[in-house]
Image (cartoon, rainbow over all chains, first blue to last red; front, side):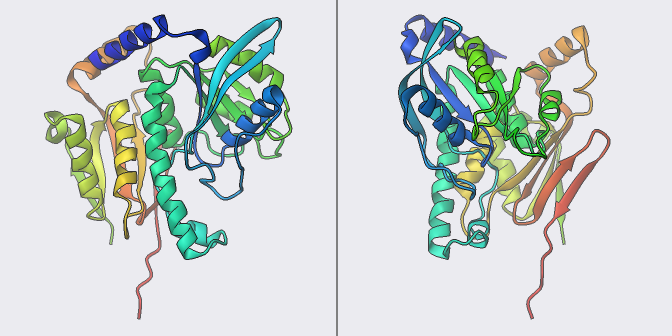
Length: 210
Length: 126
């Protein structure tokens, strides 16, 4: 309780002296949810360029990536922020999974090593965020402990959260199930890959970071 | 053979966050599945993941984690407030936290009425 109060006071003080353009918007979630695909969509839409590489093999993003000064407009309003794409958070990393996906052992071990460091960095960066978009794969079970832990942590730190149920273009996607899992949050179903419902997502960003 | 170790809340009650997490990880690294009475603080749960990542080496590939709190759902108003207050002061003793080594526990599936702990098939050589 004292910790939460301290966080709140620190945040209030930080916000008091912060320029609006310094807002850090983090993309968090489990691996392969589509965080970098969404980051690329945002960057393409508003800066005309990509942010990072995407891959079907988990843990493609293994370092924090930041794109500064993104300015989005919706319904006559403007929102400026720095976008922070984070490595997917997982509780286990097994290099043998990468070998199964077709990598050579040495490369797989290196990827595993970088992925573990990426997860530690992503967790460390939680405190730096002003608002967070949690990117979940709408075709997967939303009740996993990693998702619950991320949401709970952001709640404890009083960081505003928007949940995105990504991959809504896929047949197996179930946006309602994601909403039912996190009823206290705004959940937007999107396809970051094809841009489906992306305007609603941009509108919702103003509620958490505006 | 799968080994479970029950950790009553009083065993971690007086420990600081870092020592709590270390104690649990140390048990998991002995290839045991921890059944912790109650739950860690939310920040400690992420610390547990971070420490598990730091410890990945050799046969240790991380953890599987599940927190079950049957009382959480269905609590409303004053009861929830009262519980949140006491949990913040005394620690959260309700429910159960399961932490297992990823090399043994494949998945922990939660359902409102049951928990399924799926272990990996271990083949003996020879």
